[in-house]
Length: 197
Image (cartoon, rainbow, N blue to C red; front, side, top):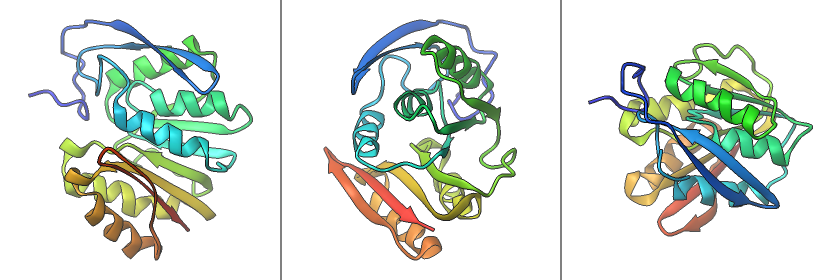
């Protein structure tokens, strides 16, 4: 089976366009086979964006596991003065993310990276992730744990995760690294977690 968190460029192409409104903006995204939530923007991402809209994000954001670009593109649109870097292991997703950034008139830095493999910076003000649950606990905990070394002092890690996918154990894991992890929003089984370095 070809998961969305792998290099699955050999899959047949079947692109489609989805549109949605968030805040005062209308967004249009191209999706395809082999990417997460290709039919519509997933509910977890929408809940995550609603929670992040209320936060004071800094000027240097990293979207880990960006997929076709929903979170990074929307956050760049809402925070135009901020630098936004988007990473994913899936080349097909990244190709779409680049198309979607241009389509929505946003300028972002997009990189293919297996978690933080191609990320040398240690000065992000905010790291955000809607983690690839199907990749397994070892992968998603690595995303959480290694975020710490890529954040500036006072920087934040934000995570959206469903309760049934281990939100409470994820909270404990993150707290063991950061010394803190708060639930800043809960809705329909989704938890938004926030930690501060």
